[in-house]
Amino acid sequence: MEGCIFCRIAAKEVQSKIAYEDEEVVAFHDINPQAPVHVLIVPRKHIPTLNDAGEEDQALLGKMMLVAQKLAKELGVADSGYRLVLNTNRGAGQSIFHIHLHLLGGRLFHWPPG
Image (cartoon, rainbow, N blue to C red):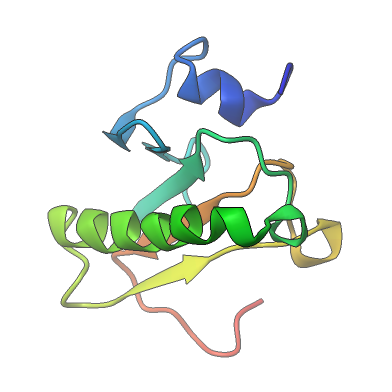
C-alpha cells in the first residue's frame, strides 16, 4: 500500500536493519526497542490489522510465528524466554496499520503486561 512504512521497508525503499527476509515475510530491528531484542516481523502482503486477515492468510500468519521462533534462536533468547505481541487497533497500541509481530527478549517480562 502506498505510503505504508512497513511496505516501503519490505520493498527496500526505506533502509532498515534486516534480521530475516524471504518472499513472504520481512523481519527487522525496531528503531525504538522496548527490550534488548526487539524485532518486527511483517508480511510483505499489506494487511492493516489482524481483523482484516482472512482464511487465505492462515499459512502466512503461521509462518510469521515460525520466523519469530527461528529469530529467537538466532538472537539468543529462545532458551531464556521471549514474548510475541501482535497489537490490533489503536486501543491495543497499534500505531502502524500493517500487521506486525513484535519479538521481544533479553530482559525479564512481567504479567499482566501494560
